[in-house]
Image (spheres, rainbow, N blue to C red):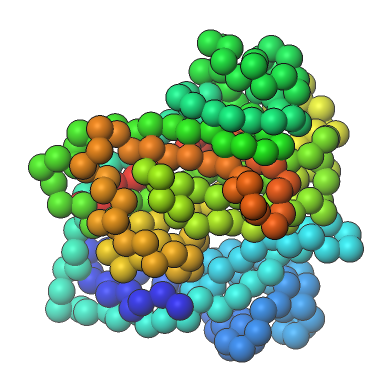
Length: 305
């Protein structure tokens, strides 16, 4: 459960999202339904006697306001969106303008890794086609990898290094890292779980249990020449390093605190994505760039001061 959120009048966007989410009897009923259980969108629709499409819209608005979490899990007919109540407290202080955070964003192209160890299935795709051979790990050294828009591997890791010069004379409150990810197998498989782990400066920052190597419909940004029989999209996952611990999509996943990562002390910030050798589900990784998948972004690292 998240700690209390304190909002002031200067935090217009958060206040508007929260107000919109709570300005609906149906959305309040959804929160009540989820307080003691998880439900998928169809189950919510049945309980409220509304169309599934309407329930999906309500769920999206509540998720954007930070009032519930969703996770895609495999079902009999493809993936299901499972909804869970986030809980916590929201405090609005009308006498306070609210804290103003300064943010710095670094966008890392997915092919700009500095180290890797991968095993097949593996490959790299650029804006116009395959970069070098498929299922040949040595091809990950190809200089053309900097143009990568989709890369995948069955096991191993890729490592990126982000600059930290701006941290030397500033007080960091939290750091976030987000990337579009999914499992990996030949072509795609909606029932292909994989435990995908993030490491920051050598410390494990949490593992996401991905249910699928997603396909069956074209990703929103995937080019038309990319075969629909291949992996098409992933889920946008966000790790947040805070003073009290490490969170994944708003859920505490590790007691490792912001200070423990020594973000300003080392020459750079090491970010590694991959599969632990001892992971229960070793289903590989797909990493999406800004012109593939459902989200138009590279790997984003955000500093909040």
